Image (tube, rainbow, N blue to C red; front, top):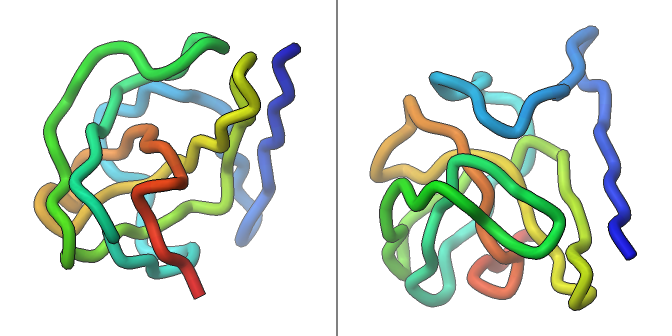
Length: 98
């Protein structure tokens, strides 16, 4: 089963999973709690198109768009402090969001 939620924020809607650049500074600021891979896109079973590893202790801007994959794992869309110009998907289990 694939469940997706796209949230409209500030008049814009996140409609793509493969942006060429970061979508801005809106969203929730999280901390990367354990090293995790950032992927360019999401295919329903997990991330595809490895972009980079985000390292523990750094920030992650969660753009309030997420999906649950076929294994019921939660994926968040946003960008890491290490590459603020590059959005992607990361498993929520690598993040602490308040």
